[in-house]
Length: 115
Image (cartoon, rainbow, N blue to C red; front, side, top):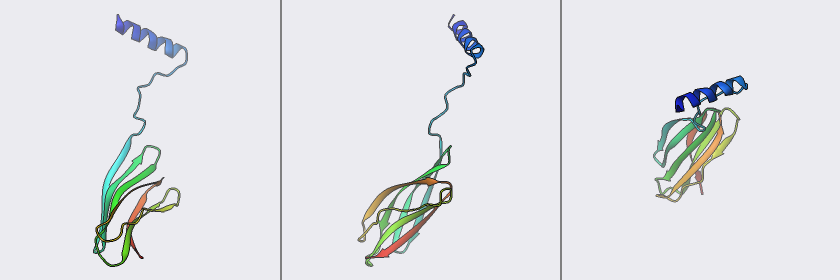
């Protein structure tokens, strides 16, 4: 009985010009892990691209050297031409979590800045 009702409802929807489609995931993403290491700092995280091409780069940057520099991550997004920096981690042993957004492929690099 239930199957007949479902078939009848589907037929009515088709006749009314409606398309019945299964629900798709709203936030289907492809994610990859990444990491960058230098003698003065390190960073790692996840780079996720959704089905519209928007990219979210999340991670943690750590200052590993008592050298008077802060460490940060820079992400360049090819799709919209933007460049974004994470927060700075310093002094040595300090960590900073971040989340950056853009469009298209991303280039993730580790940098330091003297303070």
